[in-house]
Length: 312
Figure (tube, one colour):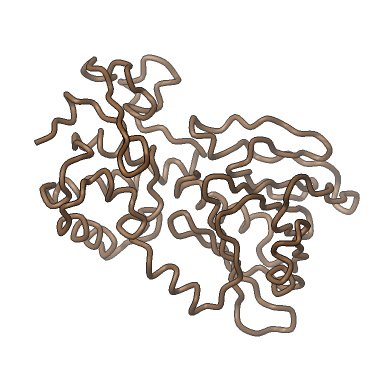
């Protein structure tokens, strides 16, 4: 499942490739035909992300209130893109391959395979024809120079502004959103400090912290030297502030690079050492040499170093 940095990259991709354009929106699969009809012919005005949720604000043809395409990719969802030489080159998120004209190229991405290399181009402006949809395409968006196909999302719906606000209201603060007054950080700290639930569960609770997935959860806790089973209320406020601020930095780097890298350069013995504990179970900790542990926690695998992250 793409983590928050990947969905933020998606919002930026739509901004670069489709914003301000009148769109053709269809549902080749047919399951989203009514929603596509509401968006077809409208102009894309707003591209936004909150946690793992993508929101595209489309002004209907002839005017009126924005209609919001709300997408959550879940475990199997994917956006893929193709375009001509004027296409701004967004990225594929969650997809195994990306199309460039009639060619398919494998994605490199990061170890979670949740971000891909930039899409190439197929033809000069005016000469390009969108490729035929492949697979079960729920939504197809065609702009002036490119096309975006959505397959397999967990959620795909058209919302009014109040309905969009209701979705956002159920989410916790997002480390990738501006927080000049520190309200997001303070809300995160307060929410964790009032809970007996383990911090490893709370970091994955999208109502507590929006956008963090299994990789960032494992790595943030390692970098903070916090065991994933420690009760939230037992974690010091300054430690939680450090976790929030670390998430801000690490996830912003993920947006900029399309990769998740949480290790310091001095700790990387090899280029593949991008993580301290995630998917390193049974291997030595990069700092102390103790074998990294793994267990199930609330239905997901959780990783930690028993020496660097002692349970108190």
